[in-house]
Image (cartoon, rainbow, N blue to C red):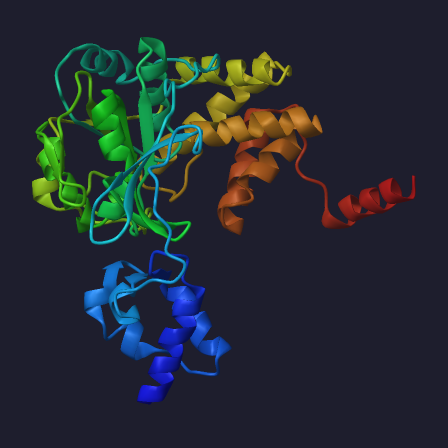
Length: 395
């Protein structure tokens, strides 16, 4: 890009400046396009000294140290930002700390929840004053995260849940800068919020994360955390604890069932005091769960509940023996209960909720249910079903 074009771009940006000299990458690129210029790589990629965060640039120095429409910046007050407390700090650029003011983070009690598995031991840990990070693994849909939330609800403990993915990084967890009304604002992450409130931090699907989770090392040791972006040292408040849930034990998925599960660093895993593998509930417990789910939708059918639990138990035993690659989770039984409440048809409810499986598995599961529950008939042919839809549309 020619020198004159660069000057024109800087002038165009300065004319749009709101008094801070701060622009996003998108704003710079759009401004270049608006004056007939191409991608300004020389600015967004070649000027590290003006980059203050990912996709955020402070161009004050390129404006000759002057910013257009400069206005004195007053500290924000709670009246101006009803859900946050904002404090400005004298920095190289205007930077504010933004903290969401939430009165209560205690999860709601679920009337359909039935305690089982690690529930009692988890309750003991979270009732104590000890910092004792826990790693809970187990197959999908067996109530790992729900159990943690319901322990917190029972104990009236605040809980903050963070869903982990391969994209989760330090900014997502600890906090990072973002652009708000032209100002670079620091947003505190859920980890520091939980530490300050003495809450239970739930890292859900933690095995989907990457080595970026290593930023939590000191926190997993229960130590104070120095936030290099704000200069603040955060000491865990009494009661702070950390529970991670995952489908694997952080070693990846050998059978390919959980293809997005990653291998986590041994140093990260070693910092969890306890590792527990959550199993599916027993048939007796699962029937209680199914009946409570039915009661919630005002459609209790004890015989149907018995058949569903028997059916899922047979499938799980076959799965554990290695004869099949899929199983029916407690969560999927809840889906069937809800489908039955909507359609009033057991066979249809089962069929709709196993459609996600491949054709052979789906047919095998449907056939097995028909054997477990003699009161249902196998699904009708496509032609008959389409005829019913046609007749229903004419009525």
